[in-house]
Image (cartoon, rainbow, N blue to C red; front, top):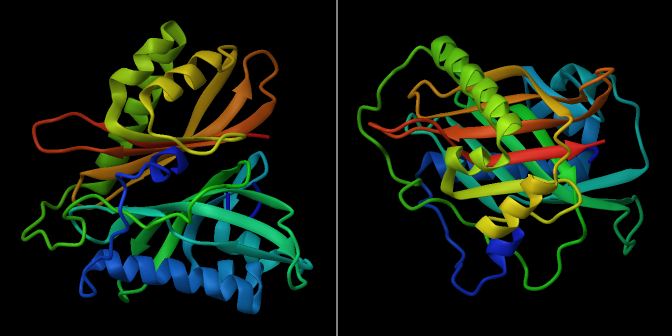
Length: 287
């Protein structure tokens, strides 16, 4: 996560920076992320998290899952600075629910100090009835420092355009559907690791602790084949957009024998009309 804990794609020359339409919901979500990051530097991590997290929110604190807003309010001051920047964003058809990911780093509260830790975050945003964007889930993983050209902000084509008359779905029902998909996915993976790819979107991003994120299919296959198959993924919760085309599931990664917690995961799902749910981003963080 940003607090504790898709670069191969971004190092290719074919990726160009994008600037969303300034009147779009995507632009507003990006501005919320940027202002959140600025607040972290200006007023400190705990105060910024308490301000930008929704009342009902999820954060991963090491190996455990807790309420993000409450955890931040109770957090003790620390002489470090947490910095981050959005690198990729996507948004639901309802334009009130979206995801953000990018690099983060922690350094001492002194000028010109080298980062102590670095990684990639994964945040789920939801627009409130007040019109404000708030964080409802924040996770991520520690990774090596990114090298090469400075990252560029990107988003799926058309994500900064309005979609007239998006459908309105039952969020509770969609969340239940996603939990069922999560369980099915984990069951199939246990039987056959190659089944992993069948539920991935063609441009899926994988964010695994210890590695810079990637969309490369061969790299993803290699990572999956190296995972310890004795581990168990236990879904804990889910959420979805009102338009029913985007959602997430999250949970703990435990050992099969004594149920010791080894880490956590988040799956971001998308669904298009006439299609099934596919994973567009998976974050796995092993403690």
